[in-house]
Image (tube, rainbow, N blue to C red; front, side, top):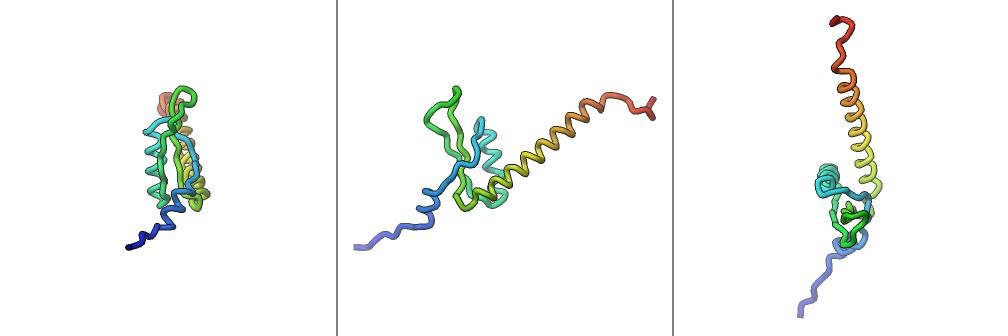
Length: 103
């Protein structure tokens, strides 16, 4: 009789997944997934069976050893998005007014 070996690394990684963020919808969850995978971080998206605030929570999970790196990647992207939104808002606010040289 042959004995089956369990892949300990795979089994332990599944047990050690940590939620690093919650997404509002599947589009945002896929954005998190793409961002993390582009940075070589394994990621799992899991939708909760229970509802919170009228919708199901979507968890973004990574293996425990990638938690710190995943947080840095997400925070960096958030800072970039905030900066981009700020510059876009300024262009919309000031872009329609003529410059003094144009008068």
